[in-house]
Image 1 (cartoon, rainbow, N blue to C red):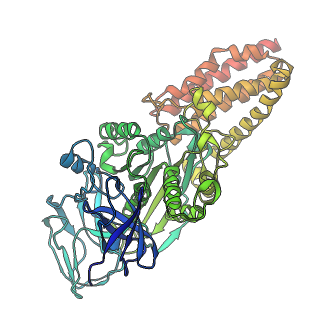
Image 2: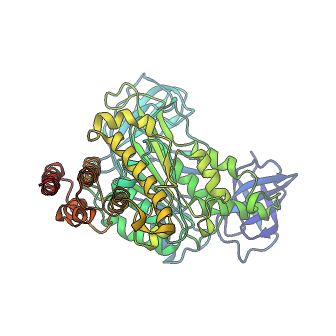
Length: 593
């Protein structure tokens, strides 16, 4: 097929138009200008193709050539992805730095994987075996704790004619040949805007454990679920996503910095390599892929970065792993859509966003889930299953949750972890507003929590939610008439709610013992706090003064349980609770006497 080469006739920021492009397809990649900047066709009008360019178009001039590449935006998938830091179009930033220094020059290219490195290949498929897309050919140890399963690419099938024996091979070596002449390597390309296929989407009944008490107890989501984290400037969206990345129960983390400030991503790049994975003991980066597209990078690349990230997540999901993707933030992606839409002079929707914003958002979130994968089982599993969980930060201007990106995201996600500026400014972290947040997954998760979490998990959760709601109602009354107008039981509830917020809903990210809270510690800590509330309420009913109960040292001891390590927490909690109950019983006996 003849190469399609057009001529640049319009330049409007990140959007260009090229004439003489008859035969080019929607979504096809193009090389723009003499520098060969990468772009994507987003509109076709006769022989004029409009494309969004993923690099800065400054200095280009009309008449420069535009070459069609014949394929959509695709990334290369194979061993060696973990531990890498890419930009939105899968260029390794470390390689780009070696080529051009700290400031990335335009038109640079770099191989996404190391083509010279050899991997210890172990085949599992055999000659004469019929294989289809998703079947496992063999594996290589990608990290010390994670095995990379090399699969037959989707849409390919045949009978194995040859397969390499165990040994050391590069990712570009042919490891298998099919009877139809198809040669397979350890890598394959996949278009990022096309969801990878799976056999069946499954309901999930296993929680996505974050190590953050307010999320795991009050607003849990499932492995394969989705949640959004909206919040205004300074509410801690990035910190929440980084904490979840460090401590969640996913096997692999895909962290996408989409349009975020450079200093925030610099912190991630500096911090993650020095963190250890609590599950394996190895470096956290060994199970992480970073996709970085900061606010000073071209705006069109923001769209590419979120699709690149979720495609990487789907690839490891298809190997049977639990993957978590952190998208920080989807608002920057939506802003990129708005800018390109305005350059195309499309009819604007609400607040200037394109009318297809809701469709794009829904399509993106639909790529999450727990699935039965195509292909053969792994390690004796009857069916290979994997999950892709998405936590998407949203940055509504001024913290206004009624704006389009937040509202569209809420409609398609299963959880809302709403961040509150007032809580953040009062140093309450994570600043999750318990009155606005919700989870649609608790009904599915209830059997799992009943079987695996501390006894009474669901009942204690509901009790805590009810008390927090009652506290909100009483706070409105206090604003009108003051606390002295309340009865002692109501004043106790206000004091207990403050304990709950400070000792349970808050966590100290700088404390080794409090930054992460296991389900065991979370359940028993809430039980201890509620035990104090119930014992104190019983004391008030027999005549003990409220101030006497609140001034007792046992209250402070209960509050300090959060500072204890998860190891042996149950025994320590039991002693403190028993001492508290004995002390309050003594107060009741003193009144009776």
